[in-house]
Image (cartoon, rainbow, N blue to C red; front, side, top):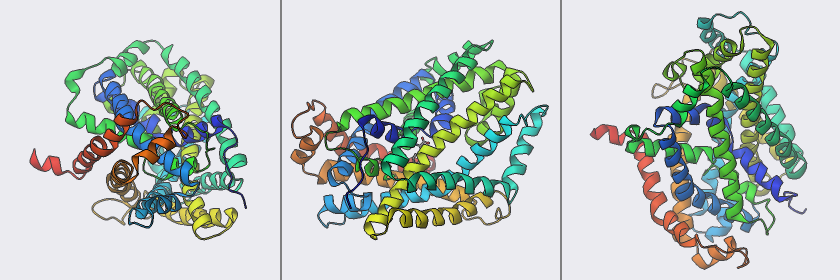
Amino acid sequence: MEREKFGSKIGAILAAAGSAVGLGNIWRFPIQTGENGGAAFIIIYIVCILVLGLPIMISEFMIGRHTHANTAGAYRIMSNGSPWKWVGWLGVFTGWFILCYYNVVGAWTLHYAFLSITNAFQGVDAKDYGNIFNHFVENPWMPTLWLFLFIGIIHYVITRGVQSGIEKSSKLLMPALFVITVCLVICSVTLPGATRGLEFLLMPDWSKVTSSTVLKALGQAFFSLSLAMGCLCTYASYFDKKTPLAKSAVNVAAIDTTIAIMAGFIIFPSIFNIGMNPDEAGMGASLTFISLPNVFQQAFGAGSSLAAIVSALFYFLLFFAALTSSISLHEVATAYMSEEFKKSRKQSAMIVTATILVLGTLCSLSFGPLGNITLFGRNIFTLFDDFSAMVLLPVGGLLISIFAGWVLDKKFYQNEISNGGTLKTPYFRLLVFSLRYLSPVAIGLIFLDQLGVFKLFS
Ligand code: PFF
């Protein structure tokens, strides 16, 4: 049977951008920016993307497009039987592993969208938002039901195939996500006192920049661009041979960064409008599910329809972002099962879905009934999260950059990214330099930093 392809360049870019734009853009990037020097952090982040992120993204695209195979198959083909083939397998494992816990948060966004639409936050006291969230995640049934619904939606999209499932959903969800973001930015920046929020986000404060800021920016850039998880390689395996790799990578990175900055334009003006301190608002789950529902109620009129609409739009934004990222992760594992074990797409998707339902449920229950199961002081969810962020991603990124920089033949590489010499590649030397030297050193430093080696010395 002929292997599927994306039907258009724009479909391919939107799908890859869908993978990149995720929870990381909305619940992590804005707060990291605000706390680490505003525009100074954004500049460092963009440099990290240009100098370190793009070369790896282009390499992943190149490997996927050249081999037209799932990530494990792609590296096996590229490595000519050498042990480098394990890099592909690691990418598949990382994608699948992240999917297990990423879905859990995706499910929470659905629940909060539902609460917002039904105006359930009407009349809630500011101090009670924490209890609402804790009761929800500790409950054995509710988060599990939403998780099954969230995974069911992903499963449906994946079984429809590359063009009718992934591409079609990206063409629908990504523009919707953008429109929602613009609407929310307009609502937020027109609030009284919005400029203080924008100043907090954008005023460059170089005094806050330290070596650890650079490592944070780099870690965020890698996670946000979905590098080293097999997603980009798998999606690129559905690219047409003529798809320009560098240009597509620049487009994906630009969309990803724009949405991340716009998320800051939504969050900070609202937080400052109600006189809250960004430190109090927190980051990640506490920002998203405890502080922000309260912030939206207070900023847009407690109990009002506008507050309900803004809140619902925000959680749908998160839901769409999480959904397109989760779809890309599911596809990594499904393509692997289907091609490596010669199974139909439906059977493969079924197997992947079954495994993530089981492990996702365990992660979800680790906030409630399974909370006492811990290892290294972490519950199951945090173990999945930390192991992937601290070990799998840096190791994967490091191996990919060494493989692309040192092992792959340079003539072959240049021929691929220039589409057989038809495109100019003035950036090629910088790209190779980055893959050979800059990326391995930078990722090595992040790895040591995350393992706490630097803290040991300070
Ligand atoms: N890039 C996504 C984000 O910023 O949230 C994270 C992500 C993780 C995307 C895993 C895709 C993925 F497979």
